[in-house]
Length: 386
Image 1: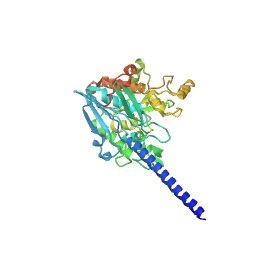
Image 2: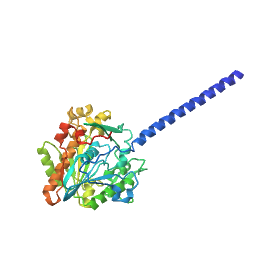
Image 3: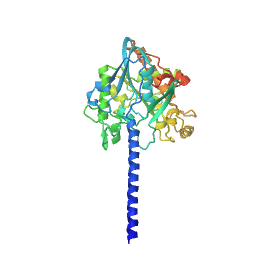
Image 4: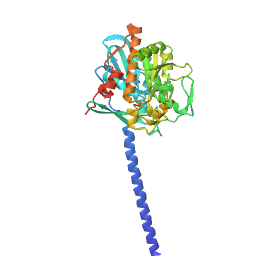
């Protein structure tokens, strides 16, 4: 009996040590994961270039987002000569990297000679603090510059649930459109916003307030979509901006850039290209490029896919005629998508200015698609701080 009790005590002590060991391992794992999670709350730096003349916070236009994860930086590039004002909004969907990266390139390299350019690079700032669940997205990607490597955040499609929860079963936006519950965290379904609504609706309201208060003439919302999405490599324009978009598309085609034009559907509510124009009278245009890392046909979602844009499944889908854009062995690189965005923005500004010379917005040192192809996007970004 004594021997049995001794063995039982030995087993009991062994189980306790096993339990303590497992508890310790779990505690260490949780601690390391928490550090990794917390690291996503730190913004990779943006280095304002010589064209930046001022900086503000979006909460300066609506205090209802002050002190929240929705507040974000606003950059001003103002020329010495008076003219019109344009807005470029990047980062509406943080899993569409050409959007925010195009805006950052503007901030770091462009100089305005006449008029004003207002740039928001991380519109859904909260969305850059987490990736979408079950997508396997990397948290960051990197761009080579001549003097070092820059790191950029790859986020989720909408507001981080930790900042806005819970989702309703059905979301009815401010324009009365009924949507699936998770769309309540999608900025581009939340316009014109609600000063007393969900955090994302308050963010939308702040952006619309900024457009009103700054008297913005032309507002451009940068996006990306999966290659199998019908509205791709295209501009979606409010009816007050369709003529502008069509002329810009024709001129871009002469430069070898194919881009379509779609009118903003009057019955599709909550989107920037509809609600900005209706609520403020600004000429509202949304631009889409082709991002294979978003699509349903993709293989592993790696940093290489985000930056290089090559995916064998999309190549095969293109061969079968299943895509709305060309997709060859060169893929759809991030450099190419940023170049398309920047040249389209440049052309829209040029056409707008030629139609209304008193409201000219003249921007210099804005890289073209050809220059980015030749030199790489990193040549137009600021070098990383050592």
